[in-house]
Amino acid sequence: MCHEEHLWNISVFQVHLSNLVSLHLAQLSNIIQELIEELFMEQLGTQPTAARFSSCHIQRQVT
Image 1 (spheres, rainbow, N blue to C red):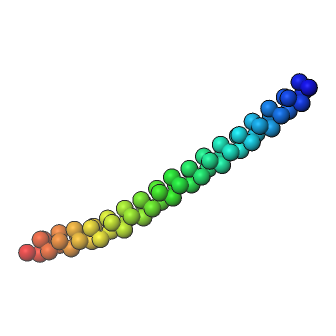
Image 2 (tube, rainbow, N blue to C red):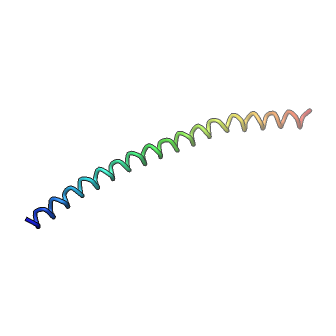
Image 3 (spheres, rainbow, N blue to C red):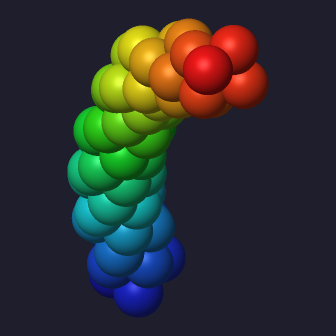
């Protein structure tokens, strides 16, 4: 009886642990996706600004 109860506790713990792991993996993938999107947005946002700044800077030097 005690041995069966112990095995049952282990299986419940394994199910709980696998649920936790899959939950954390889902959260991690969401976080990574958000970070990648932010990096792309940042690169897309800063490149035109840098181009505009450099052309404006060149125009100032010319005049």
